[in-house]
Length: 431
Image (tube, rainbow, N blue to C red; front, side, top):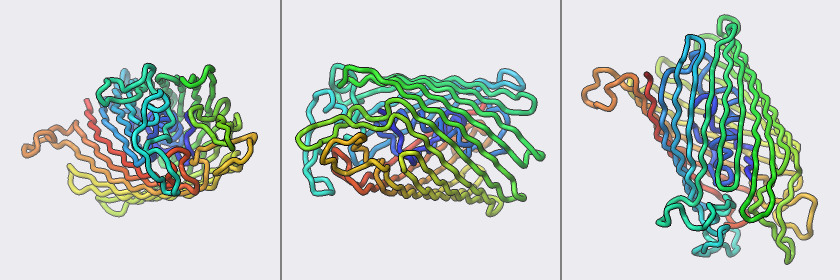
C-alpha cells in the first residue's frame, strides 16, 4: 500500500525534529513521506543539523503547518508539533504529534462517491480529472469528514524519543505509531554517534525498523509488511571552511508491497497488482558544505541508488544560503533526479504476468525541484517588529516546487507530468 518511490528518501523529521519536504506527499505516500521516508532519511545521517550540533537537543517547542497541492488534484495539510526537554545533563526527551488531512477525488471514488469532470490526459486518452495516484480509501461511511468540503481521510501519528550521552557517545532512540482508516504502522529507530579527532570526524550508525498492517476497505483481507534500514554516515571537517559527508544505507522490505487500491486492465479483465514480496534498496551519497564567506555557504551533493528490482537513479542537489542580517537568512536550492525503470514494469500488459504494476513511479523518468527558504531569528530590542523581539523565537518558511515526468502516463489521470507545491510555516521557541 505505502510504497515510497526510489527517490523518496527526502524528508528528515524523526531524529532531527525538522520537516524539509522534498517529494510530493500523495495519499498513499503521505504516511510514507511524512513518516517512514522521513525516518529512513533521518537515519541516513542527519545532514540537516550539522556535525557540530549540540549533543543534546535544545529545550524547545516547534510547531509546523505544512501543505501539499498537486496537478493531480491532491491536497494534503499536515500540522505537526514537537517538544524537547532536557531532564538531566546527559538526557533529553522528545514528544511529537502529527495529523495528515487529505482531500482527493479518488478517495471519494473508492468509497463509491461520484467523480466529476472528464478530459484528455497528456497521452491523448480520455480520463477523469481526478487524482488517482493516491488510490486511497477514505473514511468509512463515505463523504468528507465534515460533509462540507472537509478532508476525505485523516491519519494521526504520535512519537516519543530519548537522547542519551553514554561514555562520550550520543545515543538516540525514537518510536512512532500512526493509524488511519485502513492502515496502522509502528516504527523503532536509533542512532549512535561517535565524535573523533577533536570532533573533526563524526561517525554515525543508524537503524530503523517499521511494522505495517494494511486492511483495505475494498478487500476482505489483512496483510503486513516490514522495512528495516541500516545506515552509516561519516562526516569530516576539511579546514575551516569545508565539510564532507559520506553516507550509505541498505534497506530491506518484505511482505505485501503492492497498492491494494490500484487495478490493472489486462484485455477485458481487471486484475490486482502483483509485486515481489521482497526488495533490497541501497544508496550511497556524498555531500560537501563549503563556506563562501562570513555570511554565506554552498552545499552540493550526489546520490546513487540501486535495488533488486533493477531500479537505479542519480540525484544531484545544491543549496545556497546567505545570512542577510542577524534576523534574516535566505536559502535557495535545486535538485534533479534521473531514474531507470524496474525490470518487470510495462506500460501495458497484454496477458497476465507474474509481476504486474501500474505504478509509474517504477518506470523510467526524471524529476526537478526548486526550494526557497526564509529564516527569521528573533532579536532582543527589535522594537520595530514586536513578533521578532525575543531571541528565543525563530520563524521558518519554505516553498518547494516539484515537477516529475515519467515515460508512461499515470494509470488513472493519464498524465506523464506531475507538478506539486509544498509550503511550510514553522515556529521554534527555545526555553
